[in-house]
View (cartoon, rainbow, N blue to C red):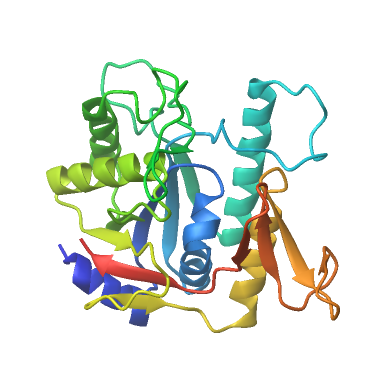
Length: 272
């Protein structure tokens, strides 16, 4: 079996024929964190499957997008639809949820891991919401989650598994738990593990930066982001500095809380 470093070299230089499992915590993370990677790889002949750990039940919703009084079950259905649409655009071959076959430990009933939510415990450290469910990703037994992932990895064949580094992108507790689960399961199964660098500006020795330079990949990522209409808006900036949903210059993301984020154009990878 190839090493993680060798798989990264293939990703950068000859991805056709590779089969990768990308693991994320919530719907939209796959596009926000790895959209350019997935779009570029699938366009180059690699097979990319996605494992999502929760349905993002605690994600804030863009005002006015959904009817007032929508239930959590209805929100889950919408988020699953958005995830499916984004995956279709990015070229994801198959999308799975942790806790459902084949990613469920033998002789166990299916498990629906819930979004833990997030609060800032300190200015630099986040934790799960105080009312996070006992079956949320961070409150459920980590050993059980690891066994679920091990079961799936043993039933399918992937060249490598790709997920967060130990900073978990911006430190969401579900991202950090996902990193811990993926690292432990990959080590148990003996599959190469590749980590996504949290800081897109970091100068990390040994890191490789995957950055498709074709317009098509960028357009695919933008359209996949637009699929998440409950979670974010893709906007442009007009000549007078105001935001416009129709302006195609200086495209960027505006999150529910008003935070602005640049459209992702590259993904940093490092061998675990």
